[in-house]
Image 1 (cartoon, rainbow, N blue to C red):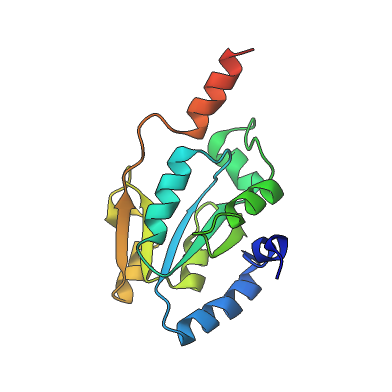
Image 2: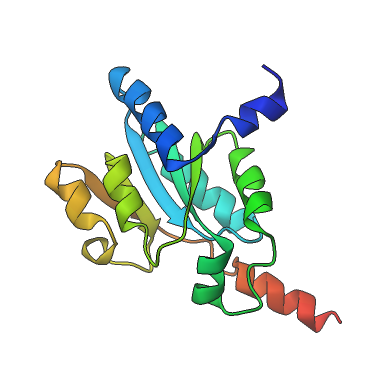
Length: 164
């Protein structure tokens, strides 16, 4: 399979993700789930996602739709459309599946995935992370990962604006 198709095969709908999850369950994979906007991929994102991936054998990423990014970040975001963000995230070797979600939170997606490990940034307390109840009810783990200081899409956006 060529590299482009390998990337495309990581991009899922909820239905295709269900099928993939069944296959992974049959082979005993440890599923890690995280989510976010990932608007402009930067060093902080790569560090976070690589560390999240290390917590299991398969990393599933819920990616906010364009509409949900605008609701969260304001009308000037996203900078990159959801199709572009899907491609970029799926191209990362340590991301095994990426799926869009448009709800305010990824709660329904987490219920679908039933991850063994749920991951968010350390700006959250584990018990406050959406989906905590789902993961803990199946004796899973909820983990946080520290961000690299100074790396954020908002900081990059400000730097670009100051340049003009």
